[in-house]
Length: 84
Image 1 (cartoon, rainbow, N blue to C red):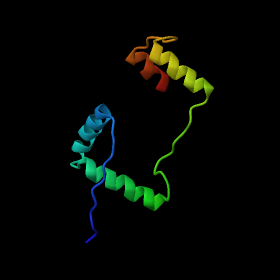
Image 2 (image 1 turned 135 degrees about the vertical axis):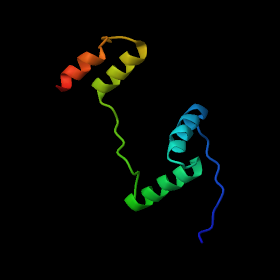
Image 3 (image 1 turned 30 degrees about the horizontal axis):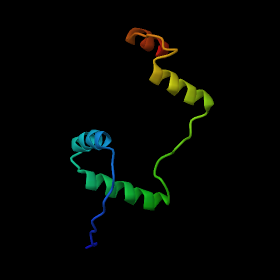
Image 4 (image 1 turned 90 degrees about the horizontal axis):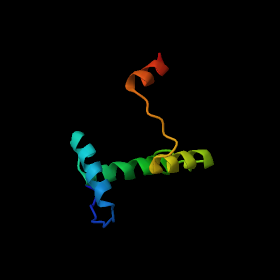
């Protein structure tokens, strides 16, 4: 049996609550989720998902969205028509 250790981690309380709700749907707790992340990190020998730094255009779009600028209202039907 592997020894368990206690670790303190500082988390954003709102992000923690949202994550816990997601993990609950899988029947796992926060500790299980962290252990899964650590296991995958060891297997991958790095972060187990891609991390990207947004380019200038993407940063501008994010900033605009947060400020409610350059936004266009689109209906669900219009979005569905794009895929058709």
